[in-house]
Length: 352
Ligand code: ATP
Ligand code: MG
Ligand code: MG
Image 1 (cartoon, rainbow, N blue to C red):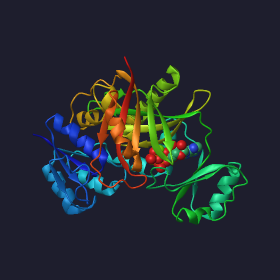
Image 2 (image 1 turned 60 degrees about the vertical axis):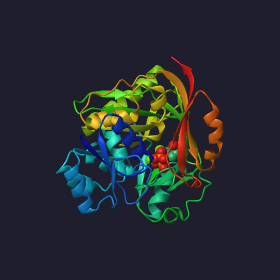
Image 3 (image 1 turned 90 degrees about the vertical axis):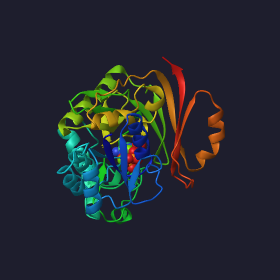
Image 4 (image 1 turned 120 degrees about the vertical axis):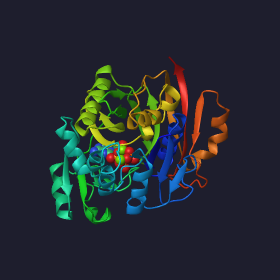
């Protein structure tokens, strides 16, 4: 059987490994942490850092293709690896998505609007940028932020900018203009080795404490807005020569227009519903794409709500299990720390 290398051992890697197994692929996980969610269900694990040269060499030797489950794989490691074995999505996608400044410039370059933004490399930069945005904005670390970490919101000119630069660690930052959105949506899309593109329906997302809480299908958006999300995804995938699944988040404004927020060059939490409400899940779609198989049909057969089980939410598991309309998926994590994603459930709300 062919072997797929997966860099990263979290729940996304776990779900990729499960989908790979169903299509007769072997999986090797590269992850420094032992007994990680992905290694529990994969064929093998290489226990090493993501950029460990010997581990990457071993991965290249033993795999037919290498993919990844998180966007902070070091770009140089991915590029070196790509000289020896196909790496999908292409390292260029990592490069564009790892830095919010590069990402916004790239997205704008595709003709897709984002929030306005300024690079912030000092307290003086922050004050000038805030002044330009009338005292409102969202300050974010350019790199490594997730689940709303590394962010600070300025709601009005009354919010003091003092100490803002050092409060986020005196690292390269970006100030984005504050977007008064009506709702947040995301689109999960895939591009195959042959250039074919398949998009799932956009999901409507609600966050709780900065972490995705629910994704609801269908999103309360017009057909035109949904079409705009698909077109944006297609432009981004084509510009990157992309292979695999991508998740792109948008703010939907009251007038129906879309502002892109960020993209993740991997399977995405807001696409977990696809395993319960579509014939082909985002995980299988990604495995199909990176192995050169034909993409599956992304059609949705049911309306649904995906709910993340975060920290103590897992205590409600017995109730979820008693429901006959709900698909339960757990990640093999034993300790329920606050903010930790333990699993998710997808409730089918209406069949099509
Ligand atoms: P993720 O876990 O999705 O990767 P993240 O930490 O990378 O999240 P963002 O998606 O950039 O962070 O922001 C988190 C949330 O903060 C958004 O989903 C949105 O609700 C809010 N937000 C971010 N940027 C803005 C903005 N410019 N204007 C208004 N709200 C924003
Ligand atoms: Mg993000
Ligand atoms: Mg986000």
